[in-house]
Image 1: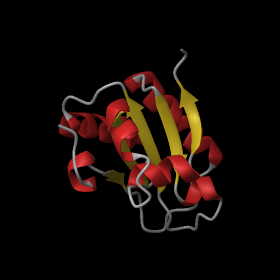
Image 2 (image 1 turned 135 degrees about the vertical axis):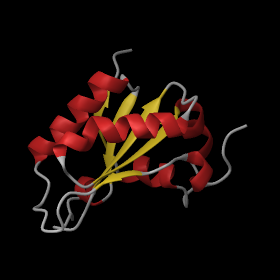
Image 3 (image 1 turned 90 degrees about the vertical axis):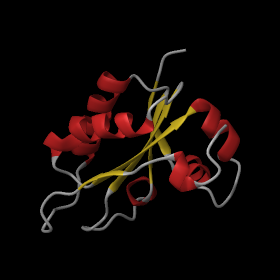
Image 4 (image 1 turned 45 degrees about the vertical axis):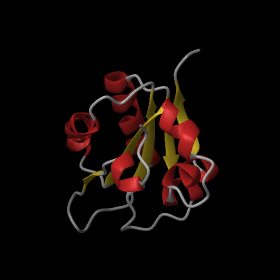
Length: 128
């Protein structure tokens, strides 16, 4: 059965650098996407939130949604993603959803997946 709320749907992997963090550059975002794409091979990587909208501030984190065919062990996957992105030392929040979860929950206006798709920008899509 698919998760019925955001808490059960995903875990956040937030990695914060120093509190005096400068804005995250486009190059750093592209590097994060490349690292995730090589390690995870997701169906999609979507940038959403303030960096996608263009209203990021110095204290903003970078929000990614990774869509994978299936997510059998979400905790393990989130730990793996934290380790992958740790060397970048940027504030990042990663949400992982399966393709089935995306289909089930993305149409609900109050759901994080809805907002990620509505305001997000696909930065990586697997070849069909």
